[in-house]
Amino acid sequence: MAKVSKLEIDKVNKLVEKYDTLKKDNKLDLSSDEDLTVAIMNLINIEEHLFFSGAKTGESKYYTILDEIRKMRKELMLKIIPEYQGEVWCISKHLLGSSYRLMEYGTKKLAQGETKEAEDCFAKAYGLYSLFWGLNMGLIDSEGVKEDLES
Image (cartoon, rainbow, N blue to C red; front, side, top):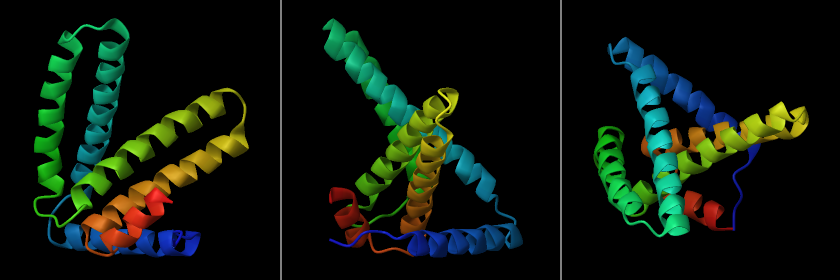
């Protein structure tokens, strides 16, 4: 199965920059979309915490809250991914969730003085985030990304 190389991620980053320029030229605000993706990342994280809280305590109230958070996350994702084909929605959710987790892990490594490992995590997190944008801008084939994530 094909791996996504640094060169491919760099290409995606350049295309994201072009997209940023296009949005600015058209008076649209990519930074708002980026803010929204970070909010979605946090909602994914909240869903995970609620799942584990429910599983550890056996209290179903956590699952009820999880369902409400999931509905909110889905509603917000529709603002960024209004139409999709195949696995794009699911892949997108996992790209954002994994990006967020790697940022958190990298931050912990940074606090422990493990700068090199932290920077590696940050680079991977940004690479996943860039893949999210490349996929949702139609610049990356969703089947290729799915294969990379499964390998």
